[in-house]
Length: 401
Ligand SMILES: *Cc1c(COP(=O)(O)O)cnc(C)c1O
Image (cartoon, rainbow, N blue to C red; front, side, top):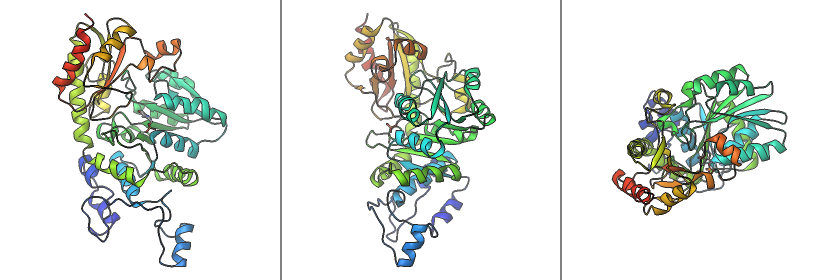
């Protein structure tokens, strides 16, 4: 295997597990088996003429690690291969991926339509910061297609959606939303953080751009912050241009950690999904639990769609305990193994009270609208033995009765 294009040719039509392990690697003259970690800020040129050609872009090659680094490039090519897009670009965090996408593709006067149940900081970015620069956002219920349609205006350039949603696991029909988006002349951006390409490929359903917080399942072990944007060359070139000019670059070290994470991504996502489904069934049978939200359960309104659109149901679920905030807090505080943290996508199971943490900034009415009740608990199910996860939660639940 001599170079990147030979490898790309050999991997054409390869399955996602093969791509997750192989795509994008270019070995150095040392012949290393594992991907090399290039910790260098700049690169030297063979001649002044070569330097000039690299700077002008006439010749491909490394210039400066704010925008070209071999380890980061391997990650970008691997994610593009897994998402099925022409290319991808890495960023310092998931929020940097969303910001860079907006900065590259929007201008003052443009309009975004976004699902209401997105990651809280995305809402702050759109409402507080993009609005200052003349980009307005309308928020709609994720599963309300009349609402999506009604929110589109002549100025709508971007439609942004997260599916499945956090924390109630609403599932959005990406194909249907892509259709509405394209008829309005806009681009559909899917935040694929919860599923990852191991469980969902939005491009197959007509999405234009996919953004990731690599911080979550792509790392999978809670070590590094990072983000990714995947899509067609014409869009990714614009996003890269913004990153080159503003600097929210992924560090080579983090890219190397994410590459190692990707190698086990599908094994982990399958294990997260298996554990979450078992936990959802068990929670449903507990007398102190009044409701369970998980698209893997046949009684969830998004079940059939998730079964069609996703390859698995993912690791995040929520449930309501009988009672209110006091009972929810008591359940959480009684756990001894689970981590009380808002993070997710980790081998370690995490538990959190959305109404007073991740969704604490919402007003009382907004919480009602979003279905964030005081008795709701979210769990990002990890990779521990399911019996131990259940026992830990059972301790909390039994303290209620
Ligand atoms: C965490 C998260 C983000 C933001 O990613 P960071 O890496 O924390 O900046 C965006 N979207 C979703 C769905 C997330 O869970």
